[in-house]
Image (cartoon, rainbow, N blue to C red; front, side):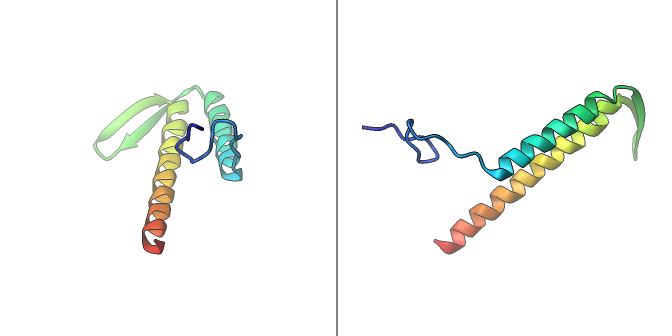
Amino acid sequence: MTSEHPAGQSAAEPRRVSGRLIFAMVLVAIVLVFALVNLEDARVDFVFGQVTLPVFFVIAIPAFLGFGAGELVSHHRVTRRRKHSG
């Protein structure tokens, strides 16, 4: 009796690392390094006012929101494709 993981693989089978995951990890590392070397403050103007934040946040927050939005869109496309094909 084997225990099944959510991906349908048994515990003894190694997981394959996709090129997409490696690419995403490299991008995250680049964004983090770039953000960490930019620690000075920057003024950010919004329609309703302005704030002063470290550049780290000005770089990291939009980058990770973009990564998250990309994952949501990708997940939605896969789900929609599966629904229409099956």
